[in-house]
Image 1 (cartoon, rainbow, N blue to C red):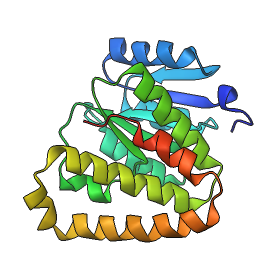
Image 2 (cartoon, one colour):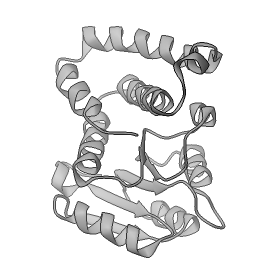
Image 3 (cartoon, rainbow, N blue to C red):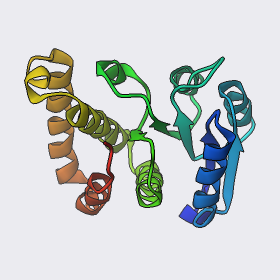
Length: 191
């Protein structure tokens, strides 16, 4: 694991080599240790032997999907943050998925940097901040894709909203730099 942001280890996982390489080149402008793999199994193999800080993970890949890789990351307790980068339109299935942020392709350089920086910042705080940003990401994606009438009637969405509100209030009281981190997080375009 890294001591400074530029020393962070970033893993880009995408089955499209051109996309993976493009993301890797962008991230290499800011981070010294960026790796690229083109499949889910390769990602798991890499994670088993490394101290990766952030994984940019394509959701739809052959053989082992990004959803499955995220599940393995959670089950095996890999100490990394997961940012889904995907062209898959989100649905309520994302509520239970183990990721920290969700960006829809195409992902701009600015949004990619902001998302990675946000996840690196979240690593320095406790699990409550991580949970809060994961909840906020899921809420933002659902709000960008679903009509408000459907959201109002969905119990899972309401549960996400309530938990995010509770955690936000608690974090407001305990994290000095929360407003700056939250502003950075909210600046990311997730639609």
